[in-house]
Image (cartoon, rainbow over all chains, first blue to last red; front, side):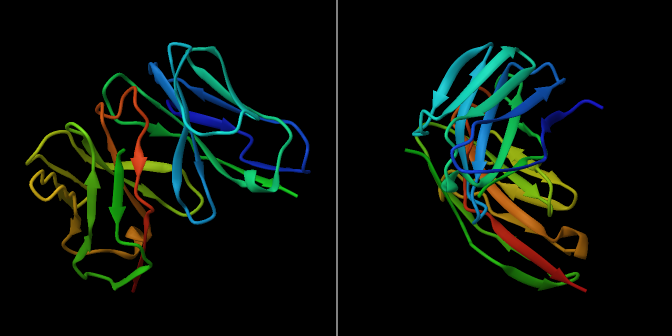
Length: 111
Length: 114
């Protein structure tokens, strides 16, 4: 199936830990993104990558770092996890000048 | 900066009722406009889009018209079904949704009762 996939779907961890969320797209798109959805369902862009170059970096703590090993992958690394990082994280991709396609989301719970 | 304002729910309707979810936006330039739908436990799916003024996007019985004069992109459906129950997000992009991130509204939770 052609899609945007994320792993894991659920991630439960302790405060202070370091974790990663992986994202892969097999759609051949140029740009990939990470969004955060809070408990009230509000979605906010965190990062986007175009051909392995960071385009957008909103006011996100530097504990969050995107890593793109190739055009089809954009992983999200989070250091020193805090309670407030608990949210659903969505990966997305898009071809140039077109709509975005979203992954199924990763629900992160920090205890 | 860009912003999207949409009515917050939950919006509860009976099956076969007429649906309107209001969406207005503020943007520099000429944004593209989108409606995304999120079913429970799933990611976001594009429902429809419009890329220039007076364009009408439509899909699955839903419609929305890009109104530049009122900076609006209201979502409508003539007869809703229980399966339409979901959270609906209005969104905009300055660059056609491509290299730029999307700016989302806060989402409208729609509940359709049989």
